[in-house]
Length: 110
Image 1 (cartoon, rainbow, N blue to C red):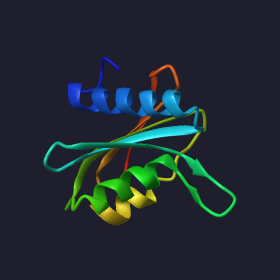
Image 2 (image 1 turned 90 degrees about the vertical axis):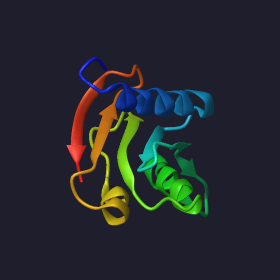
Image 3 (image 1 turned 60 degrees about the vertical axis):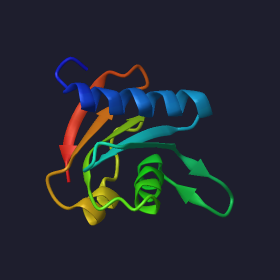
Image 4 (image 1 turned 60 degrees about the horizontal axis):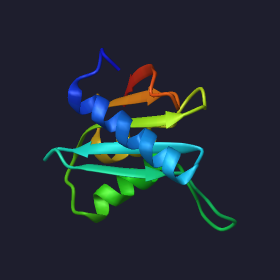
């Protein structure tokens, strides 16, 4: 995570901790335009399925957030759908993709 800013590294740490604590498939964290962070994990029930990133964005929205600065997702999946960030926060928002170890695989932009 050395190439990341301290704030983006914090997002990876939060996402990683959330994933580990819940033993979910994914953990995600987002940072709003005021610097507050929101972390969430995958929800996979018979009647509801949300990715960790979708839930983290929903948590931010439900708190009255007006925009996002960055996001991070910790997952074993090769790719992550970042459309929820794009639809809410617009283009050019960085989304850090990391493995369960915290090793950054990629940074994609919405």
